[in-house]
Length: 295
Image (cartoon, rainbow, N blue to C red):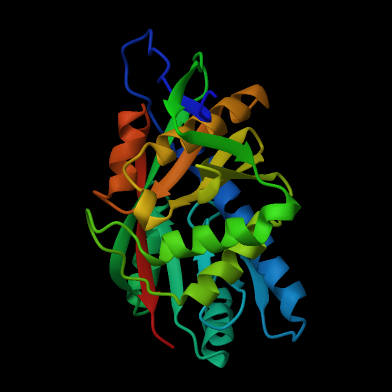
């Protein structure tokens, strides 16, 4: 009997020989999609909790999100492309987070308006870390080859809890290569945030099976021509076997078929995830500075 097989991604040939260039307009487009994703997840958390404790506020082209206590979705995203927020609006946002005992975390792209960073540092925000945004133009041909022993399939409602369990477990045990993340979240909160994010419109889930067992999960959000690779995780015992490459292949093929022109992914600087996607043709587009003001 033939073993289950999956797809591997062959990077499209860059016929121009030039690196993929990210200008301010492209960064704004990506950051707008990121803000929408965070807003969708936060809204789902508010609906799930039903206690009125969360909030979602527009902030100068971005969004300030408080999903629930200790959530990874508590942040300001997409800021810096819609003008400099005025002092009164920043006062309001900071007070809203402070009322909930939470710090304000701003993820600010280095291609955003430099005046925004200046305003934030003057208000006491401190630089705590960075994250990288990488992209791949979906203009090439995506061929599929076989990886023995791995089956990638769309995840349905019938296996959602199993999918969520393996993804949450994978994120709870990250690779240690590169710059360590400064953020720490409980497994319970990671699972809650993932549940809320993947319930949004346009998100597709994928499961990886090895010998009939779910050993990994991934997702992608297709919106406005952008395929946001919104997270992929492999159970620790099944890493270094090509699962992530297979996930990447499946999602890029589906995104291209759906008419997306760009795939993006966010990674920790110098991480295994960054190494993996760059090997598959992704380009480093820009970096986000993570600025935090304590409550």
